[in-house]
Image 1: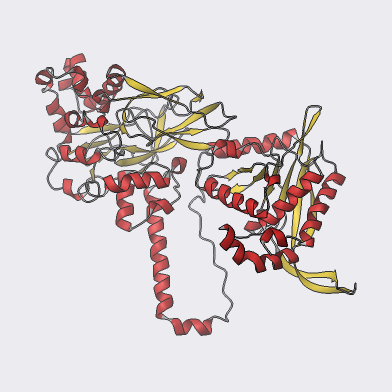
Image 2 (image 1 turned 30 degrees about the vertical axis):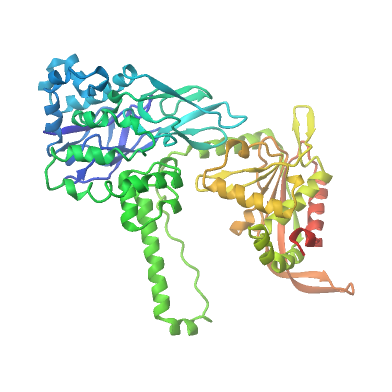
Length: 602
């Protein structure tokens, strides 16, 4: 017999979804919880896992078609449907078992005796709802609450559940994703067991301390899968330390007798049994996001290290395409290296020829439409609020960076060996900017109503470009640090921000901001002042060009110098143009003097 795959509920206010892509074809073998298709709604884009194991017999909703929640999407059969039917008559002998061990599927016939004669789609619906009911009525569970996510964070929005009711979870395994006005982050499970209830749906906002879900040890909650699998999975919650993927081999072994002999060994045998228990915990830990069994298997087959990948799926989830792209890139690099070794003689004469600039690859986003991420919406709101709440103006000066460039070239090797980080130009600008803030406190102050606050410390935000968007981690008490300390802080904060490991408190509290737009080749910029501050310094690209200077005798000569522009955007309600010019001139003089020998160890 066959089972119908239906569009599950994807949030309290979500009533329909659009099939964006089928991940399996008719005739393919699928396992329980293996990604089957991708669905797009007005709230979220997500993958729909298969609720059954078997062979995909029919696809009833084509790509780009929109259907309501509960609509039948596909049919999975080859013995799996028959096995679920066989479990129904077993209700009477099973009645002697303790109530907590009764499969969820057996409760449905007890409530509606006519269900045995119903069409194939009826058991599907009755496998899901009784499972949720059993979760709430089964063994005592523990509440998962929204933890404190930062000193100033009071609430969070659930953007995506990474587990469904009935799933087994291990301690510290990612359970859901939360978005706040400071950061997007995953919430790990504080307990091991079975997810019995989800109390806060996707896109709902709750306060810190609110109960999000219930996790317990009741076996009844683990029955979204066919009823025949419950007896073996019932004691599973006691194995708390095992990762989420650990129960999959058991599920596959149980479904094997009911499925056709030919397709079963084709997919589940190679990866899940030997590889998953060892690889899954490491993969989940390094990537910071849930990896489906399909992605883990593909990464293992292609030899791709998932720790090096940045996911392009919803919430940064690593998808099959990310693994394939990484594998293709590795193959291309390998082929290029082999070609270079094979023709060493031809490379020498070709060196003097000018190298043509590469043509940028066409982005896959071209011509597409997507929903703005939660972070992008927050950035948009803050930028508009900042412009509407301040009278913003930008002043620019030109700076000769030649002396700093020479000093850096002389000291960078010893500096790296001593401090463990590269000596870039940015710490010099940040140090000079901090010294200027101490002399001109208006630039580090803020106007609120009719009151001006001149901060007693310099908390410098460093704008960081990430895959998700612009984030600004803060170097607290930067005025107490020397150049080496600033260098280490910049490297540490920027690295953890790009890896989504920065805390909400580290993304707040700035009194002044520095943005290095020159790192992307920009010569000049007019950055927007973040709300709650009065100024932001933009550093342009450093370029060599002829400049008129004075030589040692005071004569004017033309020389090749390293030059850049510094842009200061500021709140004109507090900072006058003369204040901005005096501040920029102080920073300019400090850089052009280049007296940083003691800072770099010379």
